[in-house]
Length: 507
Image (tube, rainbow, N blue to C red):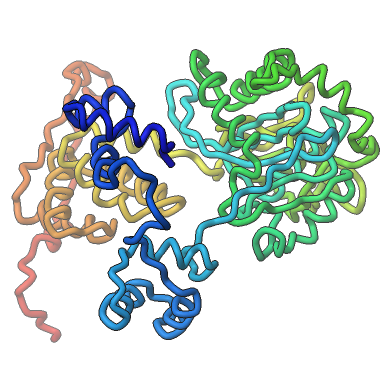
Protein backbone atom coordinates (compact mmCIF):
# COMPACT_ATOMS: atom_id res chain seq x y z
CA UNK A 1 0.00 0.00 0.00
CA UNK A 2 1.38 3.42 -0.99
CA UNK A 3 1.36 6.01 1.80
CA UNK A 4 -1.06 8.96 1.69
CA UNK A 5 1.68 11.65 1.58
CA UNK A 6 3.33 9.93 -1.38
CA UNK A 7 -0.02 9.80 -3.20
CA UNK A 8 -0.54 13.51 -2.54
CA UNK A 9 2.97 14.26 -3.88
CA UNK A 10 2.18 12.41 -7.11
CA UNK A 11 -1.01 14.41 -7.58
CA UNK A 12 0.64 17.80 -6.84
CA UNK A 13 3.62 17.13 -9.16
CA UNK A 14 1.22 16.28 -11.96
CA UNK A 15 -0.72 19.51 -11.27
CA UNK A 16 2.57 21.42 -11.61
CA UNK A 17 3.00 19.99 -15.13
CA UNK A 18 5.49 17.17 -14.54
CA UNK A 19 5.12 14.22 -16.94
CA UNK A 20 4.01 10.77 -15.82
CA UNK A 21 7.38 9.31 -16.77
CA UNK A 22 9.29 11.85 -14.70
CA UNK A 23 7.03 11.32 -11.68
CA UNK A 24 7.46 7.54 -11.91
CA UNK A 25 11.25 7.93 -12.23
CA UNK A 26 11.63 10.30 -9.27
CA UNK A 27 9.30 8.48 -6.87
CA UNK A 28 10.31 4.96 -7.98
CA UNK A 29 6.81 3.97 -9.04
CA UNK A 30 5.47 2.30 -12.15
CA UNK A 31 3.58 4.46 -14.63
CA UNK A 32 0.48 2.33 -14.18
CA UNK A 33 0.57 3.05 -10.46
CA UNK A 34 0.95 6.79 -11.16
CA UNK A 35 -2.07 6.70 -13.47
CA UNK A 36 -4.13 4.89 -10.83
CA UNK A 37 -3.19 7.49 -8.18
CA UNK A 38 -4.07 10.39 -10.50
CA UNK A 39 -7.39 8.71 -11.29
CA UNK A 40 -8.11 8.74 -7.54
CA UNK A 41 -6.85 12.39 -7.33
CA UNK A 42 -4.21 11.47 -4.78
CA UNK A 43 -6.70 10.19 -2.22
CA UNK A 44 -6.53 6.85 -0.46
CA UNK A 45 -8.77 4.23 -2.12
CA UNK A 46 -12.06 3.64 -0.39
CA UNK A 47 -12.79 0.01 0.46
CA UNK A 48 -11.41 -3.11 -1.27
CA UNK A 49 -10.78 -3.52 -4.96
CA UNK A 50 -13.97 -3.38 -6.93
CA UNK A 51 -12.71 -5.78 -9.63
CA UNK A 52 -11.68 -8.58 -7.25
CA UNK A 53 -13.71 -11.72 -7.89
CA UNK A 54 -14.90 -13.66 -4.89
CA UNK A 55 -15.94 -17.30 -5.24
CA UNK A 56 -17.89 -18.91 -2.45
CA UNK A 57 -16.24 -21.95 -0.89
CA UNK A 58 -19.47 -23.96 -0.93
CA UNK A 59 -19.86 -23.28 -4.66
CA UNK A 60 -16.33 -24.53 -5.38
CA UNK A 61 -16.81 -27.68 -3.34
CA UNK A 62 -20.13 -28.43 -5.04
CA UNK A 63 -18.68 -27.88 -8.52
CA UNK A 64 -15.65 -29.99 -7.65
CA UNK A 65 -17.91 -32.89 -6.67
CA UNK A 66 -20.18 -32.47 -9.71
CA UNK A 67 -17.28 -32.28 -12.17
CA UNK A 68 -15.34 -35.10 -10.44
CA UNK A 69 -12.29 -32.90 -9.98
CA UNK A 70 -11.89 -31.82 -13.63
CA UNK A 71 -11.05 -28.15 -13.19
CA UNK A 72 -11.40 -27.26 -16.87
CA UNK A 73 -15.07 -28.25 -16.67
CA UNK A 74 -15.40 -26.34 -13.39
CA UNK A 75 -14.05 -23.25 -15.13
CA UNK A 76 -16.58 -23.60 -17.95
CA UNK A 77 -19.51 -23.91 -15.53
CA UNK A 78 -18.37 -20.89 -13.50
CA UNK A 79 -18.14 -18.72 -16.62
CA UNK A 80 -21.23 -19.99 -18.46
CA UNK A 81 -23.66 -20.85 -15.66
CA UNK A 82 -22.56 -18.68 -12.73
CA UNK A 83 -21.52 -15.67 -14.81
CA UNK A 84 -18.15 -15.28 -13.04
CA UNK A 85 -15.40 -14.01 -15.31
CA UNK A 86 -12.63 -15.79 -13.42
CA UNK A 87 -9.36 -16.96 -14.96
CA UNK A 88 -8.39 -20.62 -14.92
CA UNK A 89 -5.23 -19.92 -12.89
CA UNK A 90 -7.28 -18.16 -10.20
CA UNK A 91 -9.69 -21.09 -10.04
CA UNK A 92 -6.84 -23.58 -9.77
CA UNK A 93 -5.22 -21.58 -6.97
CA UNK A 94 -8.47 -21.40 -5.01
CA UNK A 95 -9.07 -25.15 -5.41
CA UNK A 96 -5.57 -25.90 -4.15
CA UNK A 97 -6.01 -23.53 -1.22
CA UNK A 98 -9.05 -25.55 -0.19
CA UNK A 99 -6.98 -28.75 -0.32
CA UNK A 100 -8.96 -30.28 -3.17
CA UNK A 101 -7.62 -32.26 -6.11
CA UNK A 102 -4.68 -34.56 -6.79
CA UNK A 103 -2.59 -31.66 -8.03
CA UNK A 104 -2.74 -29.65 -4.84
CA UNK A 105 0.46 -27.96 -3.83
CA UNK A 106 2.79 -30.17 -1.88
CA UNK A 107 3.42 -29.39 1.72
CA UNK A 108 6.82 -28.12 2.55
CA UNK A 109 9.36 -30.60 3.85
CA UNK A 110 9.76 -30.57 7.59
CA UNK A 111 12.61 -28.41 8.81
CA UNK A 112 14.39 -30.79 11.14
CA UNK A 113 17.21 -29.29 13.21
CA UNK A 114 20.61 -30.94 13.31
CA UNK A 115 20.65 -33.03 16.47
CA UNK A 116 23.71 -34.97 17.52
CA UNK A 117 23.32 -38.72 17.01
CA UNK A 118 19.80 -38.43 15.62
CA UNK A 119 20.04 -39.04 11.89
CA UNK A 120 22.04 -40.36 8.97
CA UNK A 121 21.04 -40.49 5.29
CA UNK A 122 21.65 -42.95 2.44
CA UNK A 123 21.05 -42.88 -1.30
CA UNK A 124 22.50 -44.14 -4.58
CA UNK A 125 23.19 -42.40 -7.88
CA UNK A 126 24.36 -43.69 -11.29
CA UNK A 127 27.45 -42.22 -12.97
CA UNK A 128 29.27 -42.76 -16.25
CA UNK A 129 32.91 -43.26 -15.23
CA UNK A 130 35.95 -43.95 -17.38
CA UNK A 131 37.94 -46.91 -16.07
CA UNK A 132 41.17 -47.07 -18.03
CA UNK A 133 40.09 -46.71 -21.64
CA UNK A 134 36.50 -47.90 -21.14
CA UNK A 135 33.52 -45.80 -20.07
CA UNK A 136 31.00 -47.69 -17.97
CA UNK A 137 27.95 -47.00 -15.80
CA UNK A 138 28.53 -47.45 -12.07
CA UNK A 139 26.29 -47.06 -9.02
CA UNK A 140 27.58 -44.74 -6.29
CA UNK A 141 26.40 -45.57 -2.78
CA UNK A 142 26.89 -42.87 -0.15
CA UNK A 143 25.97 -42.67 3.54
CA UNK A 144 26.02 -39.34 5.36
CA UNK A 145 25.96 -38.43 9.06
CA UNK A 146 23.81 -35.32 9.20
CA UNK A 147 25.19 -33.64 12.32
CA UNK A 148 28.93 -34.20 11.80
CA UNK A 149 28.70 -34.38 7.96
CA UNK A 150 30.88 -37.48 7.70
CA UNK A 151 30.65 -39.44 4.44
CA UNK A 152 31.39 -42.95 3.25
CA UNK A 153 31.43 -43.57 -0.51
CA UNK A 154 31.75 -46.71 -2.64
CA UNK A 155 31.02 -47.64 -6.26
CA UNK A 156 29.45 -50.86 -7.57
CA UNK A 157 28.79 -52.49 -10.93
CA UNK A 158 25.37 -53.51 -9.64
CA UNK A 159 23.66 -52.66 -6.38
CA UNK A 160 21.24 -55.16 -4.87
CA UNK A 161 20.03 -55.86 -1.35
CA UNK A 162 23.11 -57.94 -0.51
CA UNK A 163 25.42 -55.16 -1.71
CA UNK A 164 23.43 -52.66 0.36
CA UNK A 165 23.94 -54.72 3.51
CA UNK A 166 27.65 -55.09 2.78
CA UNK A 167 27.98 -51.33 2.25
CA UNK A 168 26.23 -50.43 5.51
CA UNK A 169 28.22 -53.02 7.45
CA UNK A 170 31.52 -51.75 6.06
CA UNK A 171 30.67 -48.08 6.66
CA UNK A 172 29.34 -48.51 10.19
CA UNK A 173 32.19 -50.82 11.20
CA UNK A 174 34.63 -48.18 9.93
CA UNK A 175 32.94 -45.44 11.96
CA UNK A 176 32.21 -47.72 14.91
CA UNK A 177 28.92 -45.91 15.51
CA UNK A 178 25.54 -45.36 13.89
CA UNK A 179 22.81 -42.73 14.19
CA UNK A 180 19.41 -43.74 15.51
CA UNK A 181 17.58 -43.47 12.17
CA UNK A 182 18.62 -43.59 8.52
CA UNK A 183 16.56 -41.57 6.02
CA UNK A 184 16.06 -43.37 2.68
CA UNK A 185 13.90 -42.70 -0.36
CA UNK A 186 10.85 -44.64 -1.52
CA UNK A 187 12.76 -46.59 -4.16
CA UNK A 188 15.22 -48.07 -1.71
CA UNK A 189 15.93 -51.78 -1.59
CA UNK A 190 15.01 -51.73 2.08
CA UNK A 191 11.36 -50.81 1.37
CA UNK A 192 8.85 -53.57 0.66
CA UNK A 193 5.74 -51.51 -0.09
CA UNK A 194 4.06 -48.23 0.78
CA UNK A 195 5.59 -44.75 0.87
CA UNK A 196 6.64 -42.29 3.52
CA UNK A 197 5.15 -42.90 6.94
CA UNK A 198 3.13 -45.82 5.53
CA UNK A 199 6.18 -47.63 4.16
CA UNK A 200 6.68 -51.26 5.14
CA UNK A 201 10.27 -52.44 5.27
CA UNK A 202 11.64 -55.76 4.09
CA UNK A 203 11.90 -57.94 7.23
CA UNK A 204 15.44 -58.93 6.32
CA UNK A 205 16.55 -55.28 6.15
CA UNK A 206 14.61 -54.29 9.26
CA UNK A 207 16.39 -57.04 11.23
CA UNK A 208 19.74 -55.99 9.77
CA UNK A 209 19.18 -52.38 10.86
CA UNK A 210 18.08 -53.43 14.34
CA UNK A 211 21.24 -55.52 14.80
CA UNK A 212 23.36 -52.49 13.87
CA UNK A 213 21.50 -50.15 16.23
CA UNK A 214 19.37 -48.02 13.87
CA UNK A 215 16.17 -48.16 11.83
CA UNK A 216 15.30 -47.20 8.25
CA UNK A 217 12.80 -44.35 7.73
CA UNK A 218 11.38 -43.43 4.30
CA UNK A 219 10.75 -39.75 3.61
CA UNK A 220 7.42 -38.63 2.15
CA UNK A 221 6.89 -39.07 -1.58
CA UNK A 222 8.23 -36.09 -3.50
CA UNK A 223 10.18 -34.78 -0.49
CA UNK A 224 13.68 -35.60 -1.68
CA UNK A 225 14.91 -32.45 0.07
CA UNK A 226 14.28 -34.25 3.36
CA UNK A 227 17.72 -35.75 2.78
CA UNK A 228 19.21 -32.63 1.23
CA UNK A 229 22.56 -33.29 2.87
CA UNK A 230 22.80 -36.56 0.94
CA UNK A 231 21.85 -34.85 -2.33
CA UNK A 232 24.41 -32.13 -1.66
CA UNK A 233 27.03 -34.80 -1.05
CA UNK A 234 26.44 -36.26 -4.52
CA UNK A 235 26.86 -32.77 -5.97
CA UNK A 236 30.18 -32.55 -4.10
CA UNK A 237 31.19 -35.91 -5.61
CA UNK A 238 30.48 -34.57 -9.10
CA UNK A 239 32.28 -31.25 -8.59
CA UNK A 240 35.12 -32.20 -6.25
CA UNK A 241 35.88 -35.91 -6.56
CA UNK A 242 35.59 -36.76 -10.27
CA UNK A 243 37.28 -33.66 -11.81
CA UNK A 244 41.02 -34.04 -12.27
CA UNK A 245 41.13 -37.72 -11.33
CA UNK A 246 41.66 -40.80 -13.49
CA UNK A 247 40.88 -44.38 -12.53
CA UNK A 248 42.60 -47.51 -13.82
CA UNK A 249 40.00 -49.95 -12.51
CA UNK A 250 37.04 -50.26 -10.19
CA UNK A 251 39.37 -51.19 -7.34
CA UNK A 252 41.42 -48.03 -7.98
CA UNK A 253 38.23 -45.94 -8.07
CA UNK A 254 37.03 -47.28 -4.71
CA UNK A 255 40.47 -46.79 -3.18
CA UNK A 256 40.51 -43.13 -4.21
CA UNK A 257 36.88 -42.68 -3.13
CA UNK A 258 37.71 -44.07 0.33
CA UNK A 259 40.68 -41.72 0.72
CA UNK A 260 38.64 -38.74 -0.48
CA UNK A 261 35.59 -39.36 1.73
CA UNK A 262 37.35 -40.48 4.91
CA UNK A 263 40.58 -38.52 4.56
CA UNK A 264 40.42 -35.25 2.66
CA UNK A 265 36.77 -34.36 3.37
CA UNK A 266 37.09 -35.32 7.04
CA UNK A 267 39.37 -32.37 7.80
CA UNK A 268 37.94 -29.78 5.40
CA UNK A 269 35.45 -27.13 6.60
CA UNK A 270 31.94 -27.94 5.38
CA UNK A 271 29.07 -25.60 4.50
CA UNK A 272 28.37 -22.07 5.76
CA UNK A 273 29.00 -23.17 9.34
CA UNK A 274 32.57 -24.23 8.38
CA UNK A 275 32.19 -27.34 10.50
CA UNK A 276 35.04 -29.89 10.36
CA UNK A 277 33.58 -33.44 10.24
CA UNK A 278 36.35 -35.11 12.24
CA UNK A 279 35.99 -32.65 15.13
CA UNK A 280 32.19 -32.69 14.99
CA UNK A 281 32.15 -36.49 15.04
CA UNK A 282 34.26 -36.52 18.20
CA UNK A 283 31.65 -34.30 19.87
CA UNK A 284 28.74 -36.32 18.48
CA UNK A 285 30.09 -39.73 19.52
CA UNK A 286 28.45 -39.83 23.01
CA UNK A 287 24.99 -39.54 21.38
CA UNK A 288 25.61 -42.19 18.69
CA UNK A 289 24.85 -45.90 18.99
CA UNK A 290 27.93 -48.12 19.19
CA UNK A 291 27.95 -50.86 16.56
CA UNK A 292 28.53 -54.28 18.20
CA UNK A 293 31.95 -55.65 17.30
CA UNK A 294 30.74 -59.26 17.21
CA UNK A 295 28.36 -58.82 14.27
CA UNK A 296 29.31 -61.12 11.37
CA UNK A 297 29.78 -59.70 7.90
CA UNK A 298 26.80 -60.13 5.55
CA UNK A 299 26.98 -63.11 3.22
CA UNK A 300 24.89 -65.07 0.75
CA UNK A 301 24.95 -68.88 0.67
CA UNK A 302 24.96 -70.60 -2.73
CA UNK A 303 24.75 -74.30 -3.53
CA UNK A 304 27.39 -75.49 -5.97
CA UNK A 305 29.05 -78.73 -7.02
CA UNK A 306 32.68 -79.84 -7.38
CA UNK A 307 33.28 -81.14 -10.90
CA UNK A 308 35.58 -83.99 -11.97
CA UNK A 309 38.55 -81.61 -12.12
CA UNK A 310 38.07 -80.32 -8.57
CA UNK A 311 36.68 -76.89 -9.51
CA UNK A 312 33.70 -74.97 -8.15
CA UNK A 313 32.06 -72.53 -10.57
CA UNK A 314 31.04 -69.16 -9.16
CA UNK A 315 30.03 -66.23 -11.31
CA UNK A 316 32.33 -66.25 -14.30
CA UNK A 317 35.34 -67.95 -12.68
CA UNK A 318 36.36 -71.36 -11.29
CA UNK A 319 37.88 -72.03 -7.85
CA UNK A 320 39.92 -75.16 -7.20
CA UNK A 321 39.28 -77.27 -4.10
CA UNK A 322 42.27 -79.65 -3.80
CA UNK A 323 42.04 -83.07 -2.22
CA UNK A 324 38.30 -83.51 -2.56
CA UNK A 325 35.96 -85.68 -4.52
CA UNK A 326 32.99 -84.67 -6.61
CA UNK A 327 29.94 -83.59 -4.68
CA UNK A 328 27.79 -80.71 -3.51
CA UNK A 329 29.21 -77.86 -1.45
CA UNK A 330 27.96 -74.60 0.05
CA UNK A 331 29.70 -71.41 -1.05
CA UNK A 332 29.45 -68.47 1.36
CA UNK A 333 30.05 -65.27 -0.62
CA UNK A 334 31.07 -62.15 1.33
CA UNK A 335 31.79 -58.65 0.05
CA UNK A 336 35.45 -59.37 -0.73
CA UNK A 337 36.02 -63.11 -0.25
CA UNK A 338 34.31 -66.51 -0.31
CA UNK A 339 34.39 -69.70 1.75
CA UNK A 340 33.64 -73.21 0.51
CA UNK A 341 32.00 -75.56 3.03
CA UNK A 342 31.05 -79.22 3.00
CA UNK A 343 29.29 -80.77 5.98
CA UNK A 344 30.07 -77.69 8.12
CA UNK A 345 33.78 -77.99 7.36
CA UNK A 346 35.56 -75.14 5.60
CA UNK A 347 37.45 -76.61 2.65
CA UNK A 348 38.91 -73.48 1.09
CA UNK A 349 38.83 -69.70 1.37
CA UNK A 350 39.58 -67.38 -1.56
CA UNK A 351 39.52 -63.64 -2.18
CA UNK A 352 36.95 -62.80 -4.82
CA UNK A 353 38.29 -62.38 -8.34
CA UNK A 354 38.92 -58.78 -9.33
CA UNK A 355 36.57 -56.70 -11.42
CA UNK A 356 36.58 -57.74 -15.06
CA UNK A 357 38.27 -61.13 -14.44
CA UNK A 358 36.42 -63.83 -16.39
CA UNK A 359 36.87 -67.50 -17.19
CA UNK A 360 39.81 -67.72 -14.79
CA UNK A 361 40.84 -70.95 -13.06
CA UNK A 362 41.91 -69.90 -9.57
CA UNK A 363 43.99 -72.13 -7.31
CA UNK A 364 45.58 -71.56 -3.87
CA UNK A 365 48.86 -69.65 -3.97
CA UNK A 366 51.94 -71.67 -3.09
CA UNK A 367 50.47 -74.99 -4.22
CA UNK A 368 51.26 -76.76 -7.49
CA UNK A 369 48.74 -76.38 -10.26
CA UNK A 370 46.02 -79.04 -10.54
CA UNK A 371 47.29 -82.10 -12.44
CA UNK A 372 44.33 -82.10 -14.83
CA UNK A 373 42.97 -79.02 -16.51
CA UNK A 374 39.59 -78.94 -18.28
CA UNK A 375 39.63 -78.03 -21.95
CA UNK A 376 35.91 -77.39 -22.30
CA UNK A 377 35.64 -74.26 -20.17
CA UNK A 378 34.11 -71.11 -21.53
CA UNK A 379 36.47 -69.42 -23.92
CA UNK A 380 35.78 -65.91 -25.17
CA UNK A 381 35.19 -65.46 -28.89
CA UNK A 382 36.43 -61.89 -29.25
CA UNK A 383 39.47 -63.12 -31.17
CA UNK A 384 37.43 -65.13 -33.70
CA UNK A 385 35.02 -62.23 -34.18
CA UNK A 386 37.84 -59.77 -34.87
CA UNK A 387 39.43 -62.11 -37.41
CA UNK A 388 36.10 -62.51 -39.19
CA UNK A 389 35.39 -58.79 -39.31
CA UNK A 390 38.68 -57.93 -41.00
CA UNK A 391 38.06 -60.36 -43.87
CA UNK A 392 35.79 -58.00 -45.83
CA UNK A 393 33.21 -55.25 -45.27
CA UNK A 394 30.49 -57.73 -46.29
CA UNK A 395 31.48 -60.06 -43.43
CA UNK A 396 31.45 -57.16 -40.96
CA UNK A 397 27.97 -56.11 -42.13
CA UNK A 398 26.68 -59.67 -41.87
CA UNK A 399 27.99 -60.04 -38.31
CA UNK A 400 26.21 -56.84 -37.29
CA UNK A 401 22.97 -58.31 -38.64
CA UNK A 402 23.37 -61.83 -37.26
CA UNK A 403 24.56 -60.84 -33.77
CA UNK A 404 21.94 -58.16 -33.22
CA UNK A 405 19.45 -60.74 -31.94
CA UNK A 406 21.93 -62.99 -30.10
CA UNK A 407 23.47 -62.61 -26.68
CA UNK A 408 25.30 -64.69 -24.14
CA UNK A 409 25.96 -68.31 -24.97
CA UNK A 410 24.05 -68.22 -28.28
CA UNK A 411 26.24 -65.40 -29.52
CA UNK A 412 29.47 -67.25 -28.66
CA UNK A 413 28.28 -70.47 -30.29
CA UNK A 414 27.30 -68.68 -33.50
CA UNK A 415 30.64 -66.83 -33.78
CA UNK A 416 32.60 -70.01 -33.16
CA UNK A 417 30.62 -72.04 -35.73
CA UNK A 418 30.86 -69.25 -38.30
CA UNK A 419 34.61 -69.04 -37.79
CA UNK A 420 34.92 -72.82 -38.21
CA UNK A 421 32.90 -72.56 -41.43
CA UNK A 422 35.30 -69.93 -42.76
CA UNK A 423 38.20 -72.33 -42.24
CA UNK A 424 36.61 -75.02 -44.47
CA UNK A 425 36.25 -72.96 -47.66
CA UNK A 426 38.07 -70.34 -49.65
CA UNK A 427 37.78 -66.70 -48.69
CA UNK A 428 35.94 -65.79 -51.91
CA UNK A 429 33.33 -68.53 -51.40
CA UNK A 430 32.85 -67.56 -47.74
CA UNK A 431 32.33 -63.89 -48.58
CA UNK A 432 29.90 -64.71 -51.43
CA UNK A 433 27.96 -67.01 -49.07
CA UNK A 434 27.53 -64.29 -46.46
CA UNK A 435 26.54 -61.71 -49.08
CA UNK A 436 23.73 -63.97 -50.32
CA UNK A 437 22.71 -64.83 -46.75
CA UNK A 438 22.52 -61.14 -45.83
CA UNK A 439 20.41 -60.43 -48.92
CA UNK A 440 17.81 -62.97 -47.75
CA UNK A 441 18.27 -62.24 -43.99
CA UNK A 442 19.51 -65.75 -43.15
CA UNK A 443 21.37 -66.41 -39.90
CA UNK A 444 21.40 -70.22 -39.52
CA UNK A 445 24.69 -72.08 -39.85
CA UNK A 446 23.06 -75.07 -41.58
CA UNK A 447 21.54 -72.82 -44.25
CA UNK A 448 24.89 -71.09 -44.73
CA UNK A 449 26.52 -74.45 -45.48
CA UNK A 450 23.86 -75.25 -48.10
CA UNK A 451 24.30 -71.83 -49.71
CA UNK A 452 28.06 -72.38 -49.92
CA UNK A 453 27.59 -75.86 -51.42
CA UNK A 454 25.11 -74.51 -53.98
CA UNK A 455 27.40 -71.63 -54.96
CA UNK A 456 30.31 -74.02 -55.47
CA UNK A 457 28.22 -76.45 -57.58
CA UNK A 458 26.82 -73.69 -59.77
CA UNK A 459 30.31 -72.46 -60.49
CA UNK A 460 29.59 -68.96 -59.33
CA UNK A 461 32.85 -68.92 -57.46
CA UNK A 462 36.13 -69.70 -59.10
CA UNK A 463 37.65 -72.20 -56.72
CA UNK A 464 41.37 -71.94 -56.38
CA UNK A 465 42.87 -75.42 -56.25
CA UNK A 466 46.44 -74.30 -56.85
CA UNK A 467 48.86 -75.13 -54.12
CA UNK A 468 52.47 -74.30 -53.57
CA UNK A 469 54.64 -77.38 -54.12
CA UNK A 470 58.27 -77.63 -53.20
CA UNK A 471 60.12 -78.62 -56.39
CA UNK A 472 62.91 -80.26 -54.42
CA UNK A 473 60.65 -83.22 -53.55
CA UNK A 474 61.51 -84.86 -56.91
CA UNK A 475 65.11 -85.21 -55.81
CA UNK A 476 64.25 -87.26 -52.75
CA UNK A 477 65.22 -90.92 -52.68
CA UNK A 478 61.66 -92.07 -51.99
CA UNK A 479 60.45 -90.21 -55.07
CA UNK A 480 63.10 -91.76 -57.28
CA UNK A 481 62.09 -95.23 -56.12
CA UNK A 482 58.39 -94.64 -56.44
CA UNK A 483 58.29 -93.05 -59.89
CA UNK A 484 59.56 -96.32 -61.48
CA UNK A 485 56.71 -98.39 -59.95
CA UNK A 486 53.55 -99.32 -61.86
CA UNK A 487 50.65 -96.87 -61.91
CA UNK A 488 47.76 -97.84 -59.59
CA UNK A 489 44.52 -99.18 -61.06
CA UNK A 490 41.79 -96.64 -60.29
CA UNK A 491 39.09 -98.10 -62.53
CA UNK A 492 36.97 -99.06 -59.52
CA UNK A 493 36.21 -95.37 -59.02
CA UNK A 494 34.84 -94.86 -62.53
CA UNK A 495 31.32 -95.70 -61.38
CA UNK A 496 31.32 -92.54 -59.25
CA UNK A 497 31.22 -90.49 -62.45
CA UNK A 498 28.38 -92.33 -64.18
CA UNK A 499 25.36 -90.36 -65.19
CA UNK A 500 22.86 -90.15 -62.32
CA UNK A 501 19.94 -90.24 -64.79
CA UNK A 502 20.83 -93.73 -66.09
CA UNK A 503 18.19 -96.25 -65.04
CA UNK A 504 19.09 -99.12 -62.79
CA UNK A 505 18.70 -102.39 -64.79
CA UNK A 506 17.56 -104.15 -61.63
CA UNK A 507 14.92 -101.46 -60.99
